Length: 76
Image 1: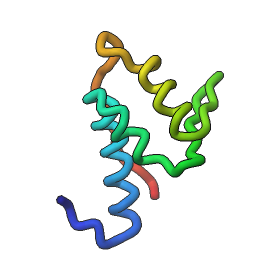
Image 2: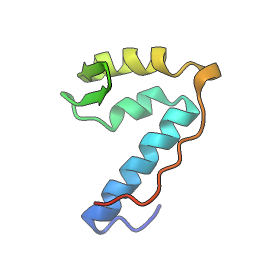
Image 3: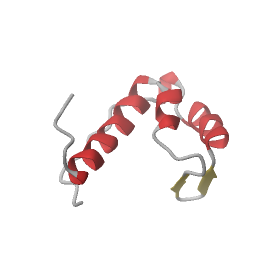
Image 4: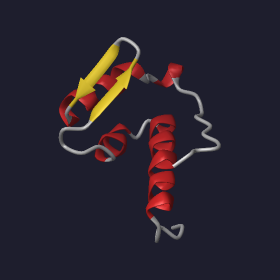
């Protein structure tokens, strides 16, 4: 596991885990990254709460639609 001693590194690690879990279809792990009342927003979509998040990501990311996320130059 990387050195997560700084808040910035914890945020970068969470962003990376968000991408990896989505790409791998680990949707329970993806949902676990959110707080109980966590919210996901994108144009035309707003989903709140872990149960709704789990239902959303399962529909939004079927195996044939998954790719690989690439995140660079995060300004934190």
